[in-house]
Image 1 (cartoon, helix red, strand yellow):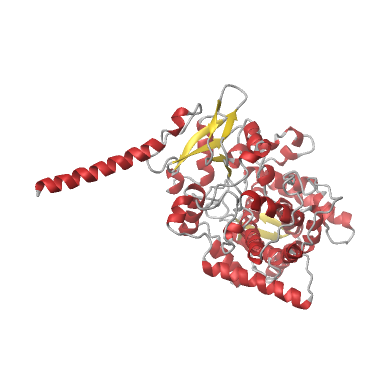
Image 2 (image 1 turned 180 degrees about the horizontal axis):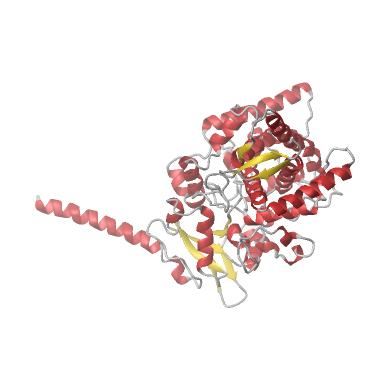
Length: 541
């Protein structure tokens, strides 16, 4: 009996040693590479501080970035997976643009996600433009690209402006009733962002500031509550351990939420077909796609018409495409617009109002530009062209996106073996299947590229200084063909909201205001600790 027990103990010990050896071998990957590597923690690699929320995600990547300040490329481990951190702007341009064919995709959300991009139609998230891969992504990008040109933004301008004006009217009404207008701005702008996405992407009108518990807003909050451990963990696993997510059969979007959003879009499209309703929104655009009627205008020239941060469409998006899309594949894009619009714009607006609160001189100057713009309109309503011709507005928004980029990082997946050559003496192969991270937040705060990087200074983006900025060091909407398709819409929304907010109100500190701001230890997004509280004070009570 003793011998049997001893055999069992020895067998278990041998198995444990074999597993340990197998995992330890994975941590030797960078020993053969001529680049520095961060020392991993067993099983968790470099992920432990973010996973346990000892650091927020921005600080986590900034610390990874700063560990080897002279390196162009740094190795680290996502759990046990060897991963690269790209630090050098020229290498970022090569990977994102010049050598895009080696890095055309995001890391597959699930290991079963095929390289050709073909996924089952029933999977909404896997069919979004963000998650698509290979030729299917190229076809979808080319299909949707005409929907985000300057001319289309002019059509959507009125819908977004109505939401911004509704916000201003709500604040004015609350002030007339004698209330003190003290708000937490992330909640406020999440509600306003929800209203914009409802009207622009889903073709419905809601007012989440007045009707605070409306179903559309609550469903969105349920899906994108990044302070929820469950939502945060799903996002973390999607980016850093997709194999585990598939093993656990986790889906980012629950079946009930998919059913809700899909039903809303299908019903809306059917109503329009039945009654001949035409509305300049995303539903109308998707219906045009179904009929093959959405085309890029031949005479439309892509420019930075929406501001310095605008990303320009690549040849991929300008390619003619005749692929026929299913209803489910198109509905998935509405879901993506919701995911992006609900969170990223509200995050940008929250940090923008914080900076205006912390820098009253900037707020005063921006208000003055708004008043001068109003006078130039001679009583006519604000229009797209006039909004985009406000230089200081663009400087303030551009600087906000530098300090507080909505995406802390972007990543690219190596689809075929790539010979890395930094032009000096470092040459080696990045094998197919490896992920490269581009740390936007850390790049934007590197003193090599931005003087006094932690200081909010819109003058970095004035006419004289903006030409000195290396485009690869300022990437709030990503880089290359895989950049954010909706940058024009996002910038238009931010500018419209701040225009109508500052026109009639000033932003004043309250007892709850936190200056300087601290970040919550979130695993995925930038969240102010305790929120951004301020008073929205009428300028002419």
